[in-house]
Structures are given as C-alpha cells and as structure tokens.
Image 1 (tube, helix red, strand yellow):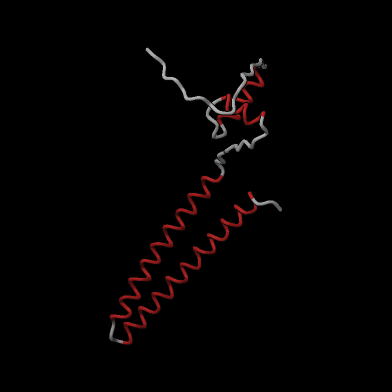
Image 2 (tube, one colour):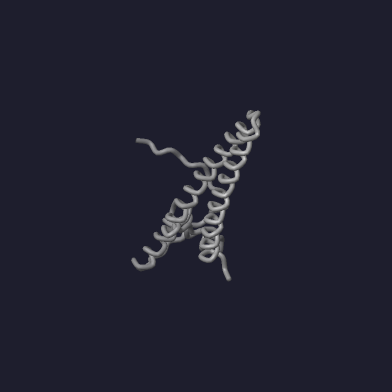
Length: 134
C-alpha cells in the first residue's frame, strides 16, 4: 500500500528528539487530553514556542444548577404562553366581570413569574460566588 505524500511544512526545519520519564509523559498526555491539541508533537511545539495552551475542564458540580436553570426557563416560557392566552381572552371579552377575572388571572401569573425570577437570581448568585473572584 502506498502512503500519501504530505505537502511540505513551511517553517519546520529540524527534528528534535528526547527521552523523558513516564511520569512526565503522563502529565503531557493529560495536558493534551484536556486541551484541543491533537498530537504530542503539536503540544511540544506549543510549549517550546511559548504559545498558549488552553485546558478545558468540566465541572460536574454545575450539572444540578444547569438542570434547575433549564427547569426555570421552561416554567417561565409556559407562564409566558399562559399570559398571552389570558391577554387574548381579555381583549375578546365584552363583559366587565369577565375582564376583571382575566385581569386577576394575569396578576396571579405575574406573581408566579416573580417567584421564578427570584429563584433564578438565587441560582445566579450561587454561580457567581463559585466562579467569580472576590
């Protein structure tokens, strides 16, 4: 089987080779796994050229917070739909008593929105305390 020829890489002139201990190699392998770098050679080039290596970490403690935020978002969307429906009924009604009932229903929905927004602010405060510097 014939191997494809790669195009010439401009700027890379010399091959550098070295030996390192297994422990250090594993550190580099972990660094490579946590970054967007695909090969060990690319990682070493970044290190030798003092380029930034962006490491990506996944924090599992935020899973619960993200689920709560998603639930609050879903509830706010459904409350918004309810408010739109009641508002439409309000404008269709011709009797003052029915309009008053619709207005009360809208007021209750807005109170529910207020509670959800308070929950949302509490969650945002928790996230800010954890991630933002003091």
